[in-house]
Length: 237
Image (cartoon, rainbow, N blue to C red; front, side):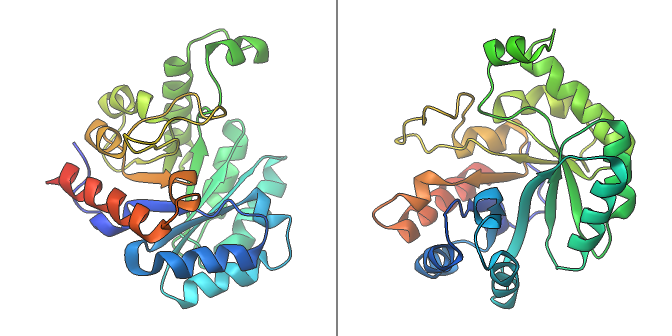
């Protein structure tokens, strides 16, 4: 069952997967109070104004998830996480082995929570074979979750398809952020192979839902966000 301590309105994280900060600001303004938590990632980081956008979101009272999937030697990742801790973001993501996860967990401060990426929702069994992983997706996710918890990370990023099994083994305090969320009437995109509806993901034990294209590409992004918020509220009820 979902964690009841998280405000329902905060569970939806809108992915600002856009090429320019100005376009991201325009989308946020169109959505208005239908969402209060936003993810800014690699695409925006390559454009001018990334940190100005972060500050602007914070100034509006929004929460921010910085999704840059830090992956480097432990000392470099630790320095990046430490610097980001001063920016006021709520979440950040990391990849890597035990040493990298431990370094990131030790470096965080000021309320920043470190989430370890388990397996990208764009990967399926065939992709894992190509990458040399001799296990199924579920086993990989569970292994990564165990290791991240032992390293002191606050949570994981996991497809909704693995959340039920993960919740059977992980303590309730482990944060689970689930990308690849698609409303029932929204077909899966070709690069998202492991997807789930908002209600099903929450009922499986996800804490936060990351939604990008179903809101970003909607004719009325505000209405699309409101519809997902209504589905979230119904699932929690």
